[in-house]
Length: 136
Image 1 (spheres, rainbow, N blue to C red):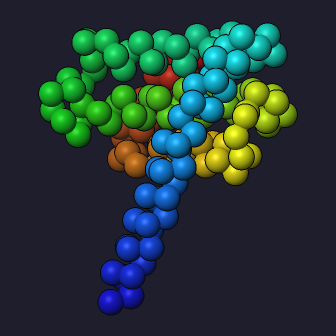
Image 2: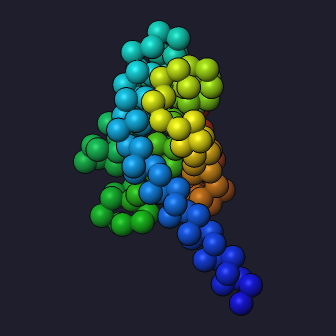
């Protein structure tokens, strides 16, 4: 009974965060466009994020997308890693300067980028993390 309530509460919180993220999609697009034009943001972080986005939409993949969940895992993880790197290296002042919405919504984005890595099993997380570190 208690477990069920906790699960329901987590699910409802996750849905609320997802709704907030979707409703702020235009703000996120503007934020990334502004970060890419900002000279204070490191070029390597911009390039890595752009490369990962190209990797996600490219037909060639480390794990083929037709394997459903397995094919999406590497994409989501790499987007999360590159996003976390871009946001953390840009710094809170730069992020807030370019953000049009509620600062709490931006906090959700940063928080979610940090938690993406915990969704994968350790061995897969280490391999993908090493790959990203080598690239940057």
